[in-house]
Image 1 (cartoon, rainbow, N blue to C red):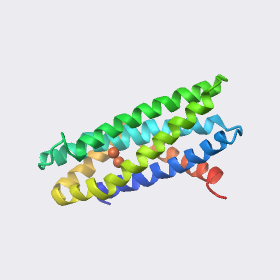
Image 2: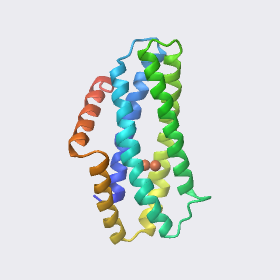
Image 3: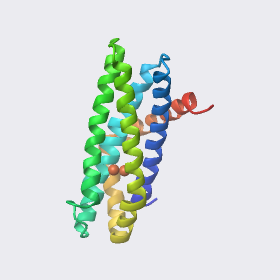
Length: 185
Ligand SMILES: [Fe+2]
Ligand SMILES: [Fe+2]
């Protein structure tokens, strides 16, 4: 698997998480009780797997490599990607505060969860589409195979420091279990 293929595979896990989050939000909007632990598992996944690990690989390795290859950060797609990562972080923060409120029985917590879950899902779905179809295509064009191999090594180091093999396995298990609960019917 090349470095870019690895990032694309991670996108699939993010999209799956968004589909699960949407299902939970549907329940909430229909006035049904939800299992708040599932939202906490999703929050942990969004923080560690998506932000620290996946966005870390892009921001610390891929984007700088592309800049080095002559694609400017300001006024171009790389700047937009950075901006959207930040937006995603603030939506996750909103979602987290909604989930905490829900646990504490706060009145408008469901509406808060729903708002930030939808915002996050829409943002990241569009973001991933842009990366898969525009940015990554550009990267494959401008980066040499040596650079790609070097990036794969850097990714492995980020993976090791941000997640570790045990936690990685655990995330995939949790995601699979949530998939069985929400996406089977
Ligand atoms: Fe990204
Ligand atoms: Fe990405």
